[in-house]
Length: 251
Image (cartoon, rainbow, N blue to C red; front, side, top):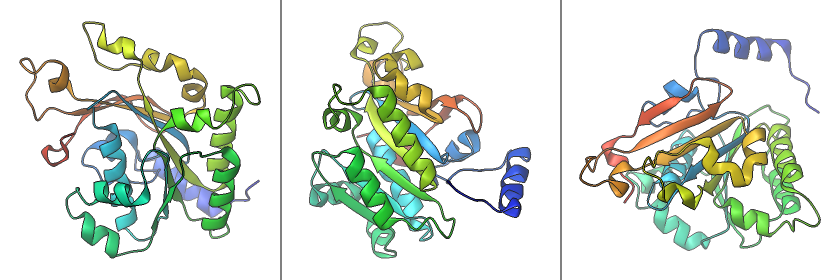
């Protein structure tokens, strides 16, 4: 349970009314204007192979950590900390961003559990000062494998994840895949139905975004520099499509 000062709530209320960024700014051109920032709560960042959703997650993590005021915790379930750092360094100005502050923490664990996540959040985040944090989990499937379905269902897992994010005043971003059936249909633009397999997480999520690199599917119909992020669900702002900068192409 959190107790919030009326003045703090008033500031957020004014931001909502003015259509300003109310969540954590991503630092990505055009994305904050549409999404109004990353929400405090649960968000999904989805994509198929070569769509660039994990690349976007890394870029957002770098941008947020660059401010030096917002802690960023990355739970790496797929890569070692050393290899993940090599991926970070592939980004423009990453070296400077990573050495200029100490707000990015990488926790590499191939078997992440809800209890482990809660313990680390309590250890690393100070909720008393009211500051916000960005927490990223790089693979929802691996997280689900660590939580046997016979002991706890997807609905309860999704609820506990969002509750943990709210309790620590954090935006919990979870990277996930889209249905393979997307590859079979003519229109390969992602939609919420492509996340039907993890629908409890979609219902709990405050924001759902999907990366779409159209040139990968139709090289003759779309230019190489056309890469979009689709906002499929957003409690803070609008829905729609945001074109990504050329410097962030997903290859």
